[in-house]
Amino acid sequence: AVASRSEGRRYSEAEREALTAFASHAGLALTDARLAGQVERATHDPLTGLPNRAFVAEHLSTSVGGRAQRSAEVAVISFDIESFTDVNDRFGHGVGDALLGALATRLLEVAGTSDLVARLGGDEFAVLPQDTAAAERLAARICEQLAMPFAIGGRQIRVRGHAGIGRGRGSADELLRNAELARERARSRAGVSVAV
Image (tube, rainbow, N blue to C red; front, side, top):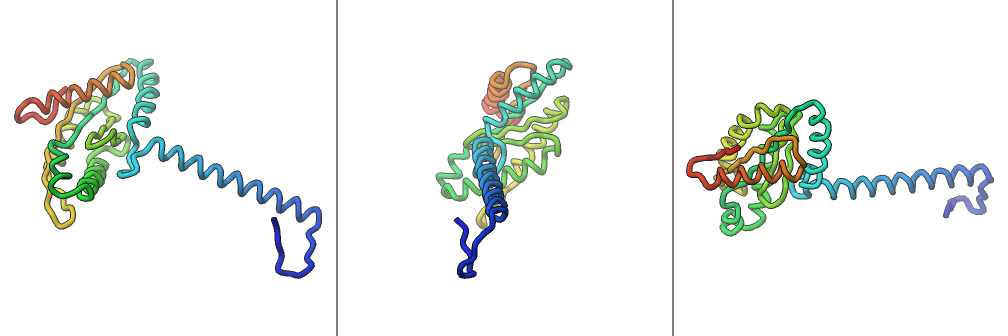
């Protein structure tokens, strides 16, 4: 519907066509914006803004397909925070969420600009390094940075992380599972932060 403040204003056929075309373009732009928002919500974690597990799986599927033809491996670093539930229980979920956000920021600072940093769920994160040969060094640096205190809500919160590295040319599920199994091996060994 089109209205004018000028009493008795009539629109010519050309004006009506132009207004109809404008309305159609505006409608398409709004639809595109809604779809983009839906895609963003489907592929990114709402708390940290990082890509989520679905995005990582798709990225790995694409990377493995491309790199397998060049006989190159893909590496996945999976890590989590030791006793994260204790942070939630002791300080509340608001502090836990703030810690996850601060952790995401720290990870982005440690990782290279071409490395993919993602939150897989809960306190589980992943980094897909572009330089697969440097995966162990990067995982060790991540664990060192996790050990540095986080200033959250006037508190200094200390956590410890464990990292596992999965390498290969297998499916996305295999690579993620291998990285998670390696992380659990690191967690089960006293004084070990990173396992392959």
